[in-house]
Image 1: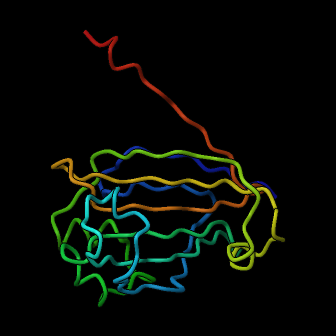
Image 2: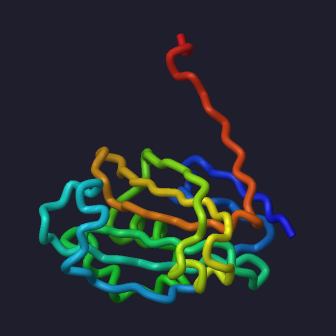
Amino acid sequence: RMVAARLQNVDETGDVAVDICPGIDQAVPDSRLCRQVTHGIEFLRLKQHEPVIMIKRLRLADHQTMSLETSYLPFNRFSPLLSEDLGKNSLYEILANKFDTFPARSTSFIEAIACPQTESEMLEVKPGFPILYIVGTNFDQNDQPFEHAESYYRGDRFTFNFEIFNQSNKR
C-alpha cells in the first residue's frame, strides 16, 4: 500500500520533517554519544575529534516500517539531549524549548539506491530493495548547522511532492 508523503517548510513547531498520512509514530532504537564519528562533522563545522550525538530513529505509520533516520548533532551544544526521551518527545520541540534553536533552512539531496544490508533489516526489506536515500544538513536561525542527517525511505511507501519558488522573480 502506498503512503503519501510531502516535504514541509519549517512550521510554527519548528519541525522540518516528512508529513506522513495517516498517523506517524516513531521508535528510537538507538540514541548515544559518539566520540569517534567522522560522518557529518564537516557539515556541522566540527573539528576532527569533537564528539557528536547520534540519534537513530525508526519511523512507523500504522505500525508499518517507513524509514530509518540517523541524525548527528554537536555534543558540546546539545549534551542534555542524551537524557531526553526522544521516543515520546519531538526533537525539534526540545531544541526550540530547551536550546532556543529553530530550523531556518536546510540543504538536502535525494538519491534512489539499492538498500544496503544493515538498513534492510531495520526497514524489513531484502537487501537491494529500492529505497530513497536522503542526506541533509539543517541550519538554525543564526545560520549555524545544528543537525546532519541521513535517511533511508522505503521506495514502496513514499511519494515526495515538491514546490519550488524562484526568489529572483520577487519585486
